[in-house]
Length: 120
Image 1: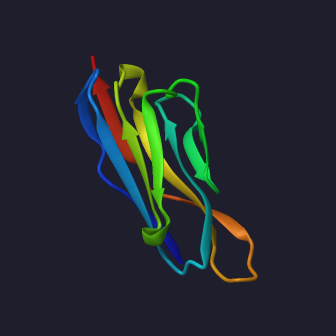
Image 2: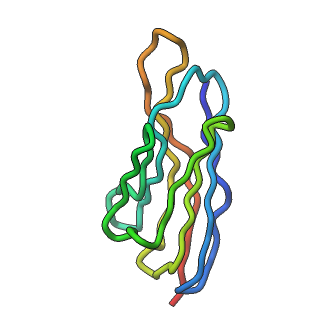
């Protein structure tokens, strides 16, 4: 099995910063993309940031404020969130494309989610 575990989110004031981390563990041969998604109440889950093979992608709404980074040796991905806004309030989910064996396909795995609340 593969598990993704996110760090605790939290409550932060607008303009503040927060750093999320996520570690993948279990039966892992290799990991392709890792990223962060979020889901606000009443809205669909959306991509926040993703990194794969040195390429990163960000949602337009977070460009210039959020930074995704990765430690491949530790199977970890981080999301540094600066200049937070109330509209960043959501449950944040870690995501990874994992190959469990040399000849298996990559499969999507998700963390359990962590709440980030930004107060105005």
